[in-house]
Amino acid sequence: MNILILGSGGREHSLAWAVLQNPKCDRLIVAPGNAGIRAIAECASLDIMDPGAVVRFAEEEAIDFVIVGPEAPLAAGVADRLREAGVLSFGPSAAAAQLEASKSFTKEICDASSAPTAAYGHFTDAKAARDYAAAQGAPIVVKADGLAAGKGVIIAETVEEAHAAIDDMFGGAFGGAGAEVVIEEFMTGEEASLFVLCDGANVLSIGSAQDHKRVGEGDTGPNTGGMGAYSPAPVLTAEIEARAMEQIVRPTMDEMARRGMPFQGVLYVGLMIEDGQPRLVEYNVRFGDPECQVLMMRLGAQAFDLMHAAAEGRLADCDVTWAEDHALCVVMAADGYPGDYAKGSVIGGLDTCPSDSFHMVFHAGTAAKDGKMTAAGGRVLNVTARGATLREAADRAYGMVDNINWPEGFCRRDIGWRAL
Ligand code: AMP
Ligand code: GLY
Image (cartoon, rainbow, N blue to C red):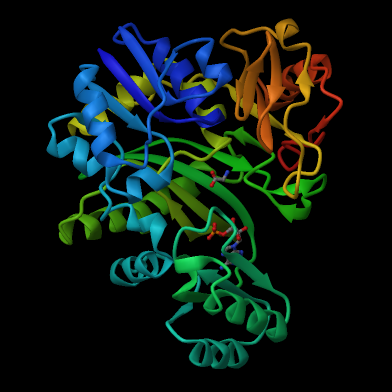
């Protein structure tokens, strides 16, 4: 098959790596890809936010199957247009992508399906939102309704902070994403993510993960896109996973189908777990980054068969073959991230890192210049390893980190600490 993956980060590098292991893959193109992906697959420059351009490209290159990595093209209708053109695609319609693109939509689906989640209010004007926050008291969580690249969530410790966040959002700090605001009860507990493939009717769990959103060790400092991840997440026991599937995921899928917007793709189920009870924090309609990297490391070639089955509506016949293994990913970022950072510094030592089914350095933001690998983003490398235990995976990953010579970069040394 000719396969096209849309996206350019470490997530897409790991998807490409897994797909290439499957003998059904004859040709793989990643658009736009990055310097690391270019070492294993063809890359093509393509505006992945332009559904018409993506359809034309897929037709010209005789693509049999498209895997959409990030949420923005999904929310822009890329998967809809591909399917209309008869191109098999993995990823939800724009309507179903509202599960990520609109927080109030998700809350309403939770209401309709009685899925446990934080109590909330939904507002289109600042006065009502401020009154609600004052009446509820702090801590309280203020969220821009739309896509805000992970930045639209403020955990307010005081009512004054909540009011400031509300004013910022209605004042346009997040553009159109903040034209509507959701205010939520602050939930306590431990967070973990569950990844579930959906084919519109059937669901199949493909594993759990935990990421580290804060930039600093011990989970301190500002939020980031994710500084590391590991899978499985021990807090998501089989019982809790079963509860999450039964009380949250299946009712959501049923409600989406009932509304005529069946969800097909991967559902990233962000959970807060307390006293054995999972509650929904958020859905994303795509793989997490860097959670995808650890999932792909564990699933290997079967990841392609499972995504293909989801796109063809065949998940009822599928199982995941698990090894008793663990995977861990350390994100190396440019000094300054998540604030301002410099681009262009040279990364050495990558050739000393093994590339096999236990070790991979996925590239998130790199560029090849004059035969050298350079940093081209905030999150730059995803150093990922697998082992029989989480400790072994961590030792392998940090062993590679220690061989990478990049003075202008940094990483957290404590990825996996909760589980180690
Ligand atoms: P979201 O973009 O909705 O996932 O929110 C980003 C992060 O904010 C989550 O991963 C949680 O750590 C935190 N968060 C969001 N909503 C809540 C909530 N209601 N209670 C506690 N923490 C939350
Ligand atoms: N690592 C968090 C995310 O992908 O949303």
